[in-house]
Image 1 (tube, one colour):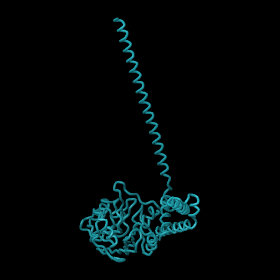
Image 2 (cartoon, helix red, strand yellow):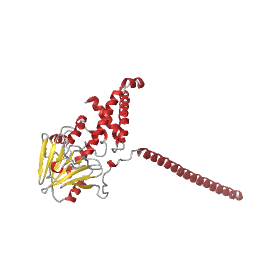
Image 3 (cartoon, helix red, strand yellow):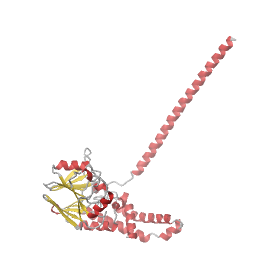
Image 4 (cartoon, helix red, strand yellow):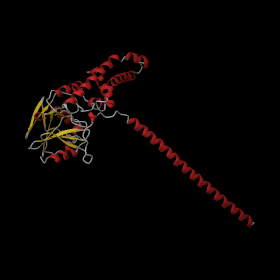
Length: 355
C-alpha cells in the first residue's frame, strides 16, 4: 500500500511539472505572439503614417520669390531696418513695424504670434518709451497681444475698428483711446509724420493703410501677400469687391517698401502688380466657370431630389474648372498657388453670384 502511494505521489509530481511546462510554453508563445503582433501593428501604423505624411507633403516646391530671410531660431523673430528709424519685425508668417521718433516709439499692431517678442525687438533697437500703438484693424491675430503694451500707451484706430472692439470686449485687445473718423488722420510724434488712411471696406471694416511719405513706406495688412497667393478664401476677407479694389488703391501710393502683415518678407510695387495679375486670372477663370458649368446637366446626372447635393456638385465643378485653369500658370511664380487657389476660386464665384 505504501509503495502504491509513493508511485501516486511521483505521478502527481510529474503531472504538475508537465502542466507547469505547458503553461510556461503557452505563456512564452503568447508573449512572443503579442510582441510579433505589436511589431506588425507598429509596422502598419508606421507605414500608414509614412503614407499619410508622404501624401500630405505632395506640395509644389517654393518659388525663390516666396522665400524670405532666415529667422534666428534662438529669438523667434527678425528685426530689419527699412528706413531712417523704421523697423520691420518678422517671424516667418507675420510682419509688422515700429518707428523711433526721438520722442518715443510708434508701434503698429501687436501680433499674437510675436507677443513679448515684439517688445523685445523694440528694446533691441531703442530705449525710447512706447508712446503710440496703431491698430490696422480689429482681428485678433494682428492685435491680440496689445494688452502687453504699457497701460499709458495711446491707441489709434479707425472708429469702425473701435466699434468692433467695443462689441468684443476682449481684454487682450484694449479699446482704442484715440479713434478717428473719416478717411484720413495725420499723426505726428517727434521727427516722424504718418498718414492713417481709411480707403473703405476691404479685408475688414475699419482696416486702414499707414503711410510714411518721406520714407516711402506703406503698411497695408491682409491684402497683398508678397511672393505668395493670399491666405485661404482671399484672407477670409469680409468684402470681396472692396478687397479687390484695395489692390489698385495700394498702387496709388508712392512707396518702395510694403509691410503687408504676412508672410516671409517685405513687399515691393512689383509684388502688388504680381498679385493684381494673379487675381485677374482667378476672376477671369471664375467667370468662365460660371458661364460654362451647366447646372441642369449636372441635375440630370445626380438628380434634383436633394438640392444641397446638386449645388455642392455644381460648385465643385466650377471651382475645379477655375482652379485647373489658374494653377499651372502660377505654381512656379507664387508660393501656395497649389494649396489655396481653389479657395480663392470659391470665394470669387460666390462674389460673382451674390455681389
